[in-house]
Image (cartoon, rainbow, N blue to C red; front, top):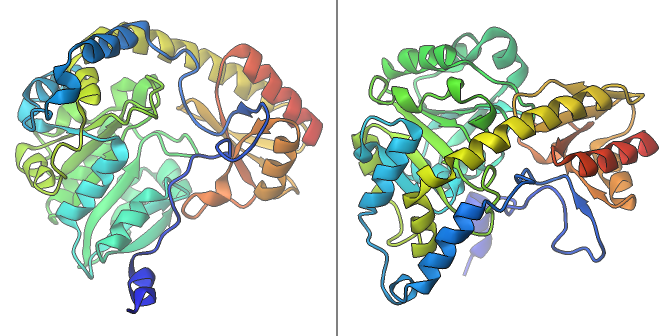
Length: 364
């Protein structure tokens, strides 16, 4: 059996967060994974305990229509209707479903670089090929001016991470809609990944899927609610787009615990808003102090992470030196088209941020 032939067609690096906390022994400050340091949300824990107290949560299959969850998502995200919402097993599933629905062998997809690497993973798994555009062009010229010149007759999808991971650059709602409008005329779908939109909700295009049926918005609850182990997220799109993606979804992929969280989104909104204010303040503090570290250049960010580059040290060297001081950071070389001298720093609470800063000063 020729497994190598299949591996060449589909192989990709496995998913992993920035550090290696799972395989390391000892106490580390994990500044590699962007998880809300204020988590867990008390209201969320109450919902989970209530769900577990109900025997039906474990003994019955989830309602595969997810009607209550769709309605709650639509209200929370400002989508036009429940039919515009799709519950998913983490935002990563939404990316996979988007590619399953809209990518065929021979298609091309536009991605910015550096950015989240899973867009390319699923694009390639469905026979597509990525075209990388420097994200710096998107940040300086706007999405439409930067990306439209790279559209070809084989282009079927465009991926826009907003704010971008790991740079933290943010395109405005007006700029994203301008790109969507131009691509709609060419029947090109756009995935707008808003996993870190919480600090700037005014930039979200979830409200605009009714006017731009070629847009699919990807949202994660992993970050702001601090639940990477639970796997809960959602997509927002035109009903036809949502229906097509849902047709590729594994049955019952959203388990009953995650479904209960999605159904209760309105209960967590005060916690999300408080967390966003806190993270914005801590991000500004960390940016100011990291910018003063010798030999370190810090990129302004609209999310609760910072990308920083050293004058001479590579990202691999920086990651290793920070680990030696008990701090895990993400090397930006691990992103698609990543910076070989960059690292990404997750914003945490003040004490952890001070520890992170002290380690940076020591290694730089």
